[in-house]
Picture 1 (cartoon, rainbow, N blue to C red):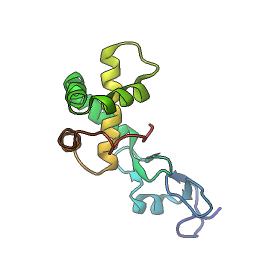
Picture 2: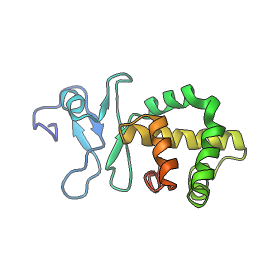
Picture 3: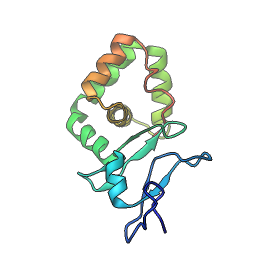
Length: 148
């Protein structure tokens, strides 16, 4: 089997990466070398990124997002409150999209924090910078419609 990026034999390790291909395919099979070079592979966690967006136009390591949640869990309620104050209508939609299976407020805030963490990584910025941008804009458009 050949790597869909370089055309060489994939070898023993096949990495499925969130790279669109002609014909509307939303993933590519890559050799480990190409996966690492693509920017769609996390060296820290040794795994490919997860694709986000309707056409997987963004990607991030989901375990890196979980690491950000662990670091910021104590602020989850405060962050949700800031976004709700800045963009109440957008926040209501985000809360519904990200928490439809959760039945307590603390877990809802953590689910929203996970979404924000993944979006910060996708946009190659810090969590605090993404939150600042959203609050200043008074809109959550930058992170809406990007299901996890």
